[in-house]
Length: 442
Image (tube, rainbow, N blue to C red; front, side):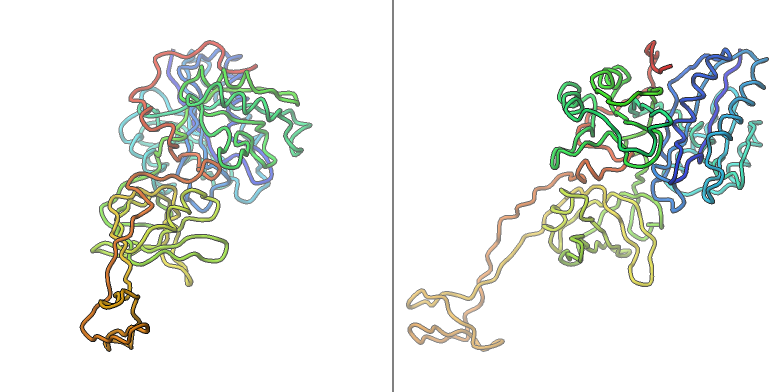
């Protein structure tokens, strides 16, 4: 018996397909060949800010044990399944598959982390494939080899979550999804907080269903495999489900965010966590988006809380110059019109600056509020005629509505990797020791 890790990526396009669906097909096919799974299929979300991603930038890894004589059949089946289900006609779809044997070395774990938090080159991936005697297959330019290798290297031995994904029959794809909304709300009430991001509490919008032409009917995310399976059983679909699979994943873990020491270290397309003081008051631009600038001793950067971020936008609007914050988010490249910008996913307020208002002094004789006679010319009282060049404006400290702490974008606009409030305190420190029996259908 040998251990085999099969990683693949970049099979879908905006028009069709889903790499998780390829994994769902392979789960059944590899079982039929005689392979046994040592883990749930691993769904690894890579850097969500790379400009060439299709949707969620998810790569897959299947971890199995099998007899040595089955290896060639497994490789052929995997290649055939990817080729038949990838949208090879689309210009930006460049599938890649990696077959890796035995234990995962530290070099590959490091590569995976860098692929989730930054940008890596194909040459780096191919060098590792050769170094460790793995096999790689690429279609077209084969860029999916990078994601496939990263999915193998991210073994999810620390924090992780689960997702039960159901798939539509072929004839229903591209049509409106038919699920009983009341059953989703019931599921949310019965399984939260062990499941999360099912329904947006601010708008009551259903969040488990995608809106594109891909084969996914719905996906339920949660803390363990039993919870997402229970939730799946509560949901009532009004169209047939072709198949479903439970994945283990880095969803909702903030795995993409990398803490940096100064604003000068910010790089385009890299998700970061960085501290800075507000350089000036936030500005609301057309569309309702809130923009502000943070600074430290080494540089400045803009931060953007876009209108769909909901709660986060409201918080950003109430910040003032001098507030010290941590900004969490992906970095947008500078352009001729805009500087480097952090697209905010979270804000942690570390220190609130005093908010001071200045008022004209009251008349010492009749207590009426005085009027200015001009810059540095003093004040006069319209009621009794008293004048003074010595009186100054009175400073009044206003109570801040904001409090120190962490603020996260509303659930409806949270990215796959963004850790929601419900998950704080539920982080895991190890991989599961065993799998539930029925974790997929068929």
